[in-house]
Image 1 (cartoon, rainbow, N blue to C red):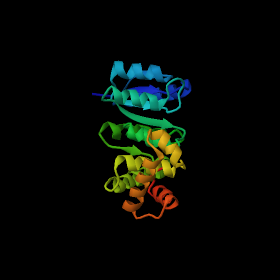
Image 2 (tube, rainbow, N blue to C red):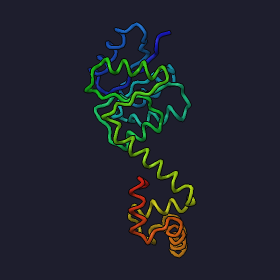
Image 3 (cartoon, helix red, strand yellow):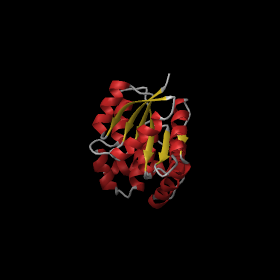
Image 4 (cartoon, rainbow, N blue to C red):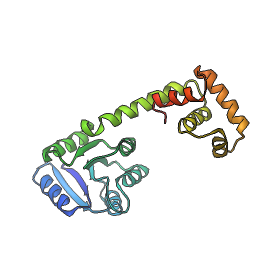
Amino acid sequence: MPISLVLADDHPIILDGLEMLFRAEQDFQVLARCVNGEETIQAVRQHRPDILILDIRMPGKDGLAVLREVKKDSLPTRAVLLTVGLDEDDLLEAIRLGVRGVVLKEMAPQMLVQCVRKVHAGEQWLEKRSVGRALEKMLLREAGERQVAGVLTPRELEIVRMVAAGLRNKEIAESLSISEGTVKIHLHHIYEKLHLGGRLELALYAQERGLV
């Protein structure tokens, strides 16, 4: 059985190139090509391809919105991002939404072919230059969350994030619909549990662990 593909990019020239690339290989079948997010979601729902090759920057619904829909519908399609570049937050979100491969458009076309074959086989292909720092940031954040989750309550962790983001007690109280006095009590417990001397130490503690 050939590996079935849906191709999504808002540049027709890119789509033409992708289609030619995969049609030249024996083990691929291009089911649809899409130029915006809505078309892409419809094509994935209709064809349920093995692999979706997706540009993150598209008109209407962008690549992340497409990935959210695919995940919400529990579709079996695996996604590969083909992109000029990603900022760290978008990349982390894409990985959390199940992206299994990331390839930069500047790379040789055969790298994309290899990536798709590996992702279809159940492996990951995350191009190091594009994901290195972002993955480090994600792992640091998750390790930091695990570390403090064993000590703090969910509400206390929420307050730690707000303090690290620069919010004052009054703003925290308004955001959480509690009194300033309750915020102060929570902070007292947080300082004691983490053995910290005050607000500045808490903010630094959160930043060092990637909690912001």
